Image 1: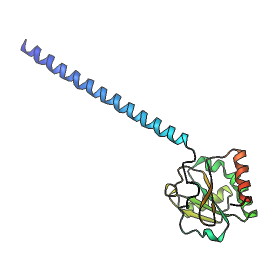
Image 2: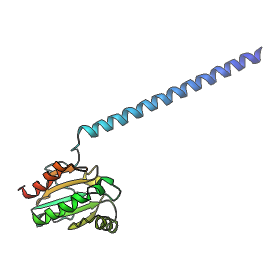
Image 3: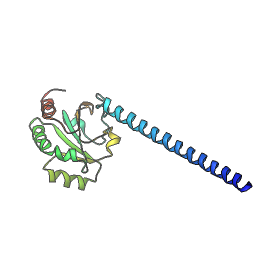
Image 4: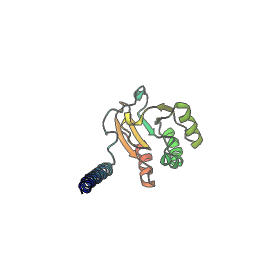
Length: 177
């Protein structure tokens, strides 16, 4: 009989531990879901949270003063939206040449990888720079940033653009900043 009491106590302790572990797993799962939803809705509620307008653009060693306008392409070789946007970028580079707008592609990959990628997509920019996009406040690719001769951000476009936004980018090249 004493053995039965000990077994019941051990069985009760085992069930309590199992219950506590299950409660811990449920609480952890709920917290992870809350954090995910909060982060997702925060990103969706402010799609222009990248690169602040009228701020100095963080890309170093660019001679902003040499051109009235510079269009920065924040892209990545691993971004399928960048690849899908390549036909527009080819047209955009031609429009930049006509409007005397300097073009700079910024990628996190090495310059050689970036050159191979851009050449393969038929996009020929004036300069290619390697930089961590997050250091430039570019939180997603593709991102287009129109910068004035003082290095100040004047316009930002995020993601793969619909044709109306593509037209807006091209129109912005011709407008004075």
